[in-house]
Image (cartoon, rainbow, N blue to C red; front, side, top):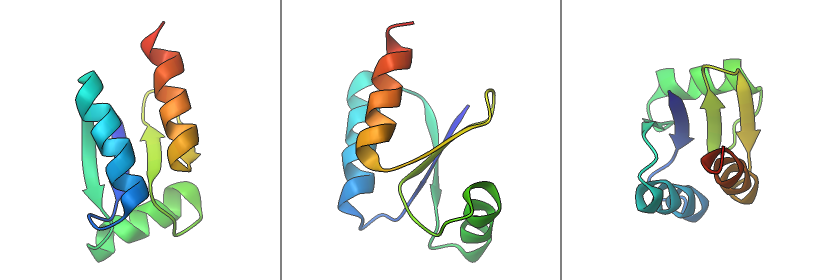
Amino acid sequence: MLDLFILESCPYCIKVMNFMNEKGIKYRKIDTKNNDNALRLLSLGGIDQVPFLYNEETNEKIYDSDMIIAYLKKHEQE
């Protein structure tokens, strides 16, 4: 399962969520407004920055909306 760490008001997060929703990509939205979620983000990625995509199955961790979308496009074709 893909975990997407976001802040609801972040335009880069909205960009990634819109892409994932348009493509029908299933993901778990994790709002870092919640302190526990923010701490989990820091423990996984080490940086307090969103959006952050974490793939539990492959342990891949990606920051930056354009890099996340490129990753999703690449794996969409596989």
